[in-house]
Length: 301
Image (spheres, one colour):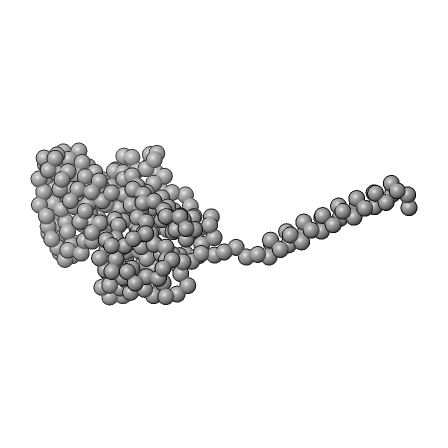
């Protein structure tokens, strides 16, 4: 074998060896299973349709980042205590993080004092008192209340009835505070009506009624309008389109879901996620199918 032939032979061997190394490396990489994070989402017991856009946002983030998501939306017994007990059961399993839509903020905050180190927590709503390291994502409850007051005033109504059930949590009470401030500034008079059941209210008399939670909004719409409320379930949007609901104040639930899961993952990666205040919007029958409301109300998965 000549000198040139030996050089060619050695060169071919080096190329084959390099190709073999690349193939082995790719095979090893292909056999490595990607890490799967496990995150539970504890909703607040509202109807499934109300949370559908939120779930779309969470599910998209889960697909993009290889997360196994478990949803809990129904609780046995008093909802606040039952949600806290469910939270405890979740972290006792193989759980990396949790997204909470609080029923009772005080009970959840107390329960989280016993949570294991390293549990990533995101709260969809106001911050939980005394809980450090938990990220919060939500529109400002006070601003949602003020926008609701503006919607009532813009209709030309001089007075209205605000319906409370006695089961309002901190978020709804903060919306009430913003609503009352808005009414005072805009010169709208109101009366507060307490009821254990929306069905027990007198028949609608044409006066605007205001609700501060999606469940109450939907129940009032079933009785007749005009209703001014919070939230955008399928049922509520149908009432808006037909005119029973006069105006709704909403946040982008899709964005809330997407960002809440990303914040959990940031925490698991050792980065303290920032709290985020979402914009809120007033939706009516006239703008519900226009940009950007159509994208907020009817997001594509």
